[in-house]
Length: 171
Image (tube, rainbow, N blue to C red; front, side, top):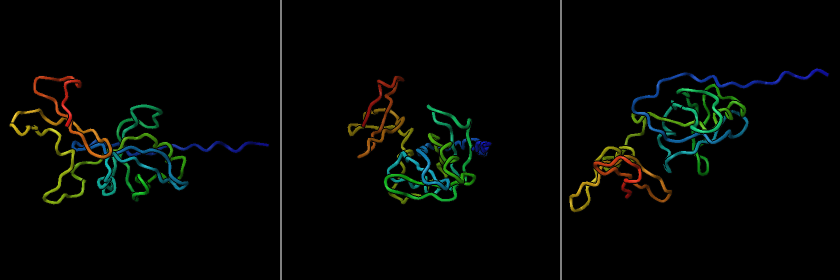
């Protein structure tokens, strides 16, 4: 008996330039369901930027299989929280096999698309580049990044005159 031809699934992503103010906000973990939804692991406990943005910019995972290269724009149809993650559905991703091809992709959102903050609120990413001083007025260095440990975030500073990661100060 003749065999049916194998179904091929390809990503038809729209090539794009990564916006100059793009911030990495999460990554795609896996397909979720059978209709093209996928599960997203947010880098932040409060995934407001992921939920608010209608366009995500994807780059392939730094490790593992790569099903696309460069940067691509993904138009988001719906995104919502589900348990401890975010689930989303995008234009052109209409079945589980196509959603699986997105596994591992890094998600970027332009900082300009983040929801507005209140007068006394800020995003952690806005601290990067600011110089930290202790209570005595001694400069500790500029914030070069953050480490999310779960319960709280740790600021990474690079003291003046140093460049090695081992010289960083953590608060």
